[in-house]
Length: 496
Image (tube, rainbow, N blue to C red; front, side):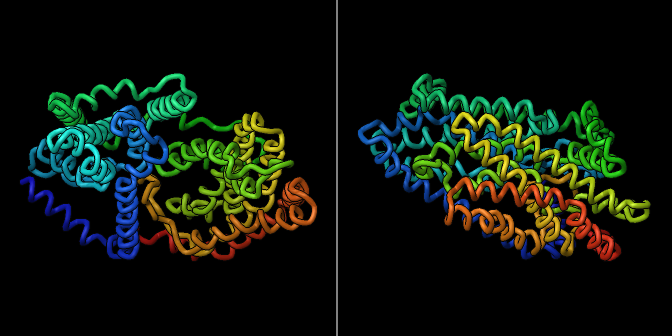
């Protein structure tokens, strides 16, 4: 029965209309997956050389063991966003005369067949063969690599339980992210190395199989924790049960002052909070607020005098407008399931478009406020973010929305955002050009002929002029939607 279920799932995927329609996308994703795995393997091959340069003379094995916990914390984070839950087919299987445990076993084991399951092996296998086996022999190398691999697989099973148990809660993810940032920061400053907690385990695994046995027991325990939870909750009524609505029905009171546009902005906000894909975009916007830490204090981007490197303009645009830059690319696709409602409503299209404008401006303003702590690195960064904010909401927002209205496509909001290309078309790739080129088309001439501050002021002034002309600029995109509303509505009725 187990292999019969595997065969049925394979046939379902092969015969799906969406598979045939997105065959090129699947091939592209497969190629991208192989490229990423190749990069991981390449990093593993160069790991010894990197350690020779970064820490010459140190015991590289002990060094890796002392920082191993950061690898697993990072794995927890990327698994949270990429790893998919194996419960999507339950509704089509539970009504069949098949044991529920067999169905859950099939789904869980099928989820294990993933590129994520071999990342730890690809990364550490070359180092194991080249360095660990030379010092501790084949048995020591085998037990060390096996302990790392089993820990990675334990995170796989734990993540399946975690995401389903807490329904994509941000609390646990925020705690892990905070531990990762504070731990890495304390290690960098020389205060405390969080990795010393797990270092003895991997050190011991070099000379004894006991840690390997312990890791195996933990992994089996994580599997049965996940298996037991899925079996006890695999009921159709649980799958269709309404999720906790403590926060998802909350409106933003400020928007209510703007009439119909404000009401639809509040409706759009509820859509974002309620659905997995849009909620992921909102979460990513919060994480990318830390993007400036990579650039602002990097010596490679330091400049004498002004302290404003030309690359900082892109960073400022990215930080203050990250949510708008991501969400607006699929401007109408978010409403593909109920677009006909706005067509039938009086002034519905105008209210929908202006409501989205209002939401983008509000979230971008919150991103600006959240970026104020960067002033600690220099007051000029506050000026940079203010000017970039005005350019985002005054000019760039209209450009992105204009491109996004070219043949919008339907999408399912309940699916995750990672490696999900529903709603994505050629327009989403073309709009990368104005996102990158438009700010520099304004900034560089003034920065070159006058100075960097003149370039920033030009960005801000152009953005303010765009804000003053908001009504005619937004009316251009409203007219495009009104003109093509029936064609857009027809495309949204296509099967995904």
